[in-house]
Amino acid sequence: EIAWHNGGTGGYRSFLGFDKAKGIGVVVLSNSESDIDDIGLHLLNPKFELSNKSRAAITLDPKVYDAYVGHYELIPGFVITVTKEENRLFAQATGQGKAEVFPESETKFFYTVVDAQLTFVKDDKGQVTHLILHQNGMDQRARRLGPDYQPPPPRKEVAVNPEILKSYAGRYELVPGVVFDVTVEGDKLMVQITGQPRVQVYPESETRFFYKVVEAQITFQRDSDGKVTGLVLHQGGRDQAAKKIQ
Image 1 (tube, one colour):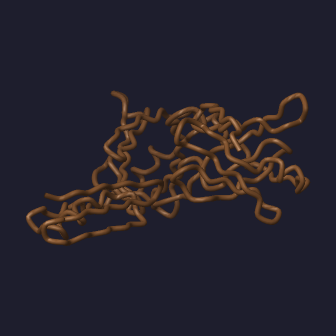
Image 2 (tube, rainbow, N blue to C red; image 1 turned 90 degrees about the horizontal axis):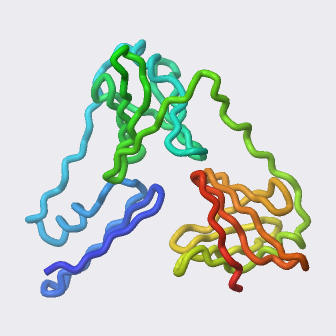
């Protein structure tokens, strides 16, 4: 009998398992979104086989890539931008870094920095209409945006009085068990959501702040007396309110 648990967040995976009868415990930590459960189980008991997830890139005429260059909207505010650079294909999602994708067929490409793949879909006229992102067991459709689409301009950081930053310090409950812990470190406002690392947010006004590690923003709310009562998380086209509890 093996007791085990796994978990993960953006770019990281973990596994912990025990074989009580044998007195063996295994911890596997990975800076990748690839599933690592098979590694942990195999170390506990070799009868569990390791998954073979290696992918092999094929050689394509770089002219094939021209048809895929463009912007693809997964959800409002979250766009995958596909570019061709020196006969290589790259994909960059909103708020994330640019990464090369490699062909395993003429329409399907894979990342090496994360366990994810892209499939480009064409209509009966041969025009690319959308792509499908395969990740974490999900297939998500992203429609191709028109040639007139313009990415939003980069956000600009402004200076904010440190006393205003201090007024935002506290804990804000999004849902039961999920809390924003807001702190001030020097002249920086730091935010940590339950189960995630602490990161800096940057002011674009006295009340609105933006992340650089992900496409998301936070707006702090005050009552008529000027007291901070909550915040709103803007992410993925949604506005989620969190009440200040401490």
